[in-house]
Image (cartoon, rainbow, N blue to C red; front, top):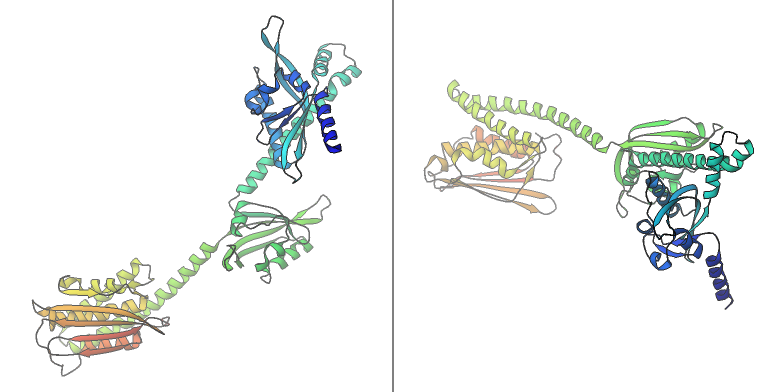
Length: 503
């Protein structure tokens, strides 16, 4: 009962106070007010309770109206954002007043206001208390005294200087806060990552959105760098921060490799950064913190590595291609002593090599699909005569070049001597991938409907090229069969192997 009595006494004191008081909810709706406030605004409690402040209590006419509304709203928002009391030294309102004739007119009034946050037992901000003091008479006196030519210094001090200084301080604070807000907004929206660390332990005081994104949006404020980024321990970055703090000398890093946990439950990921650690000093020149600024350059570094790899691969491929061309020329010359037939065969084999190069160029030399190579090398014979059956199989550049030459030779031999030399002949190409200890590609080239086949008396260039390419370049096996009803080639090639020096 004692607590209840105290609450009743406080409520009675609140209601009886000669100074206007009112209470607002966090969404700026009226929650309560005392009699002095109702008298000041000329409205009843029923008209105000639960209503939005800025709909009920508008600014009224006059050029200053937008400014006083802005001042009031900004003050309330500051209380909600900071949880701290805010003061308005001087705020002007044109208050509605009902005259003797019943007509409503507006009277200029000047107030000093204090806005105080109120919390519940759980520490939540639940209300804002506004306490206002009517300083209209003092402001009018100041204006009258200033207008008189013989105003004394004492009159100016009593009537105007205090209010004038309060107005100047309030305006200066407003400008400073606006400038601070602009700087904070620029800081938060900076395209690169930015952070401010304080003290020898490098405690996070502030960081922008880009920095939060770099680190997986984890909670950093108030934590030391070592607490906030445990996965970075041992990578040298904390030691650099210690050195910059101790020596006062900035440090700049270029293409620096770092492992960061960029997802809450994910493993550390490799990233590359350009950054600078800049010491922050106090008025006495002592280092008190470090300003961190930089950009992630992971994609640039990876692109550079890919470019170097492609150049190295291109150099390797050019050497291998020249060696292949030399081998083709020598073998073709041996089997075609006639210059005319040599030129034709040599040209066709170079075109086959060129076709596979075209496929690889489209994929930036990252590889080609087995079906694409087959279609490229057999398209001249028509899709109805060559049936392809098998799953997608991605081949590295070296394997793609070898298979391109192999399929060209098979198709050429089929057109000259095998199934494709007969109108009714067809070629069936089947392939599959066995996923055991090592993935193995099996390809079967089967010809049917062509002339009767017999085992050749000597091995030609085509069969030697096929066997050499499969065994040497692809580390596989090739079986060439010559049953009466059609030629068969069975190729078995491992897919999971080191192809760095193959070609």
